[in-house]
Amino acid sequence: MHGKAVPLALREHGHKWLCCVADLGMIEESASDDAARDDDGRDTAGNEAGHDSDDTDALDAYSRTVMSVAETVLPSVASVSVRTNRGGGLGSASVISADGYLLTSAHVVEGARTIEAAFADGRVAAADVVGRDPLSDLAVLRARDEVPAPVTFGDASRLRVGQLVVALGNPRGLSGSVTAGIVSALGRSLPTQSGRVVDEVIQTDASLNPGNSGGVLADSRGRMIGVNTAVAGIGLGLAVPINATTRHIIDSLIETGRVRRAWLGIAGAQITLEPQLAERIGSRTGIQVAGVSAGSPADVAGIKRGDIVVEIGGRTVNSTTAIQAMMVEDAIDKPVEITVWRNGALVDAVTVPLELDARGA
Image 1 (cartoon, rainbow, N blue to C red):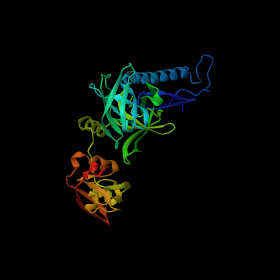
Image 2 (cartoon, helix red, strand yellow):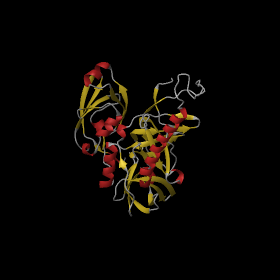
Image 3 (cartoon, one colour):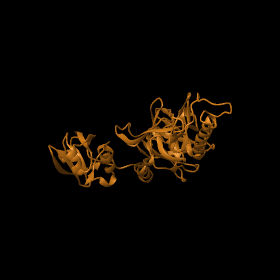
Image 4 (cartoon, one colour):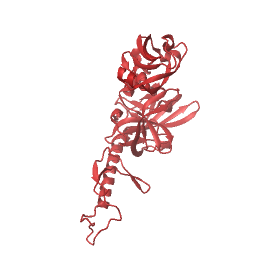
């Protein structure tokens, strides 16, 4: 493979070098260690030996990237100590506004009686919960004293698998910890304590441990693109993405302390449509209804188990995420048409979504 261009951004892992493409560009792959070299230090093709130099340059570039992110983001990351009726807990949070708002995971501050945020510059501030949203596992706090400068939000929808990411937080109470890795996968689902699922979750191999929850997942430019929220297994971390949906949730928590959602009362899974139906509706997938809650808006409208939902309000439905994205505050108590595929025909039904909180969810 000598001379072939390969993507390289190095992270040492035992005696292996892991590669990612996003931030460090392309370099030429070096010759193997056993390539024949003559007495002048040239290989048999007459090229100067540059293996060590290439590795050093790539490692330095990787290190400079991670150090730059740490220097940019760490001052805005707080170690969070929480006291509840059941005892104490630790987590992380990030400053998201100059007037003292912090972002963390909802489960970190569940049942909190007192919250204390400590920053790298020595500042310590008491904080209060402004709003929690267990359905997205996000919460907003408000510090009672001055805080460092806020982080800069990025856009997780622009991430690519293999991209360099840096996790910053306070694992096991060790403040100011930094780990780096890559985006291992996108579009994962994360079950929450509420029983709902957070979609479009980022999977990374950057090491995450208890206490990292609520911390920052940043891209190579130091922009926050995720909230570290779970450790699913050794070498596997998950983060709630920072995107248009979650930014709306954050804004709602700041403005009203809660997030209002609409509810249809159906559960289902994505399936591949038959070619003729896919061509007819312009989508290759739909949502097959696996269950309908008794007395729910969908039940009242006549939606049945086995139906395949293909449109809601004239918009194509090709994933459960698409349905959740439609069930926003503006959809509450407003009639909407649902189109399903049933027994070889398209059937329309009109339903009125209710507010999710109204049923105690």
